[in-house]
Length: 229
Image (cartoon, rainbow, N blue to C red; front, side, top):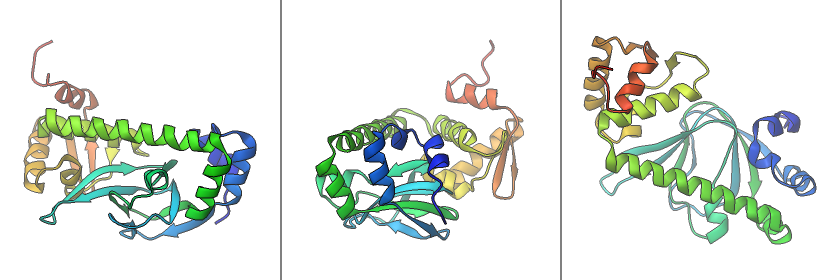
C-alpha cells in the first residue's frame, strides 16, 4: 500500500503540526503494514520496536490482570499515533495493542525515531505533547471507572463509539467488547441493554446496536434518565 501523504496530513493533526522539513524526514522513514484482525501488534512488557500510526481499521488497547481478566481500555480509530511513551522513557510497553479489524499501520523503526528525536527538538516536543494528551485521556478513564456507575459508563462508551462510527445511528460492537470497555461482566451489559431496549433507547442486531434515542442515552450519562424536565 502506497502512503498518500496529502490524505494523511488532511486527517492527522499531530503530523500536520510538525515543521515541514522535519515532517518530510519523518514521512520518509514510514513503512506501511497491513495487519489481520485479532493480531497482537505489541504486548505488555515488549521492548518497543516502532512508533505506530493507525491509518485504517480499529485497534484495541488492552490490560490484563494477574488473574487473567481482560479490560479493553480504549478503541483507537484513524488517524491515531501511539506507542510514544516507550521511546521517551526507554521502558517496555505498558499495555497490549490488538487489531480489532483489518488494520493498516504506519510504522517508524525505533532507531529512526531515536535519531530524529535527538536531531530535532520540534519532534521531541511533539512527542511530549502527544504523551501529555494520552496521559490526560488515561486520567479521564480512571476517573470514569472510579466515579461513574456501570450504566452511566456504558452510556458514555456508547456515545463515544457512536461518534466514531461510520453510521449515524448504529454502533458495531459486541456485548463482549462493551463489557471489556466498561469493566463489568457480559451478563451485566446484557441486562442493561435489555432494559434500554425495553425503554426504546436502542435496538440490538447481530454484532451491532442501533441507537434509537441518542438524547435518552445522553440523559443516562447525565444521571437524568426518567426525570421530568
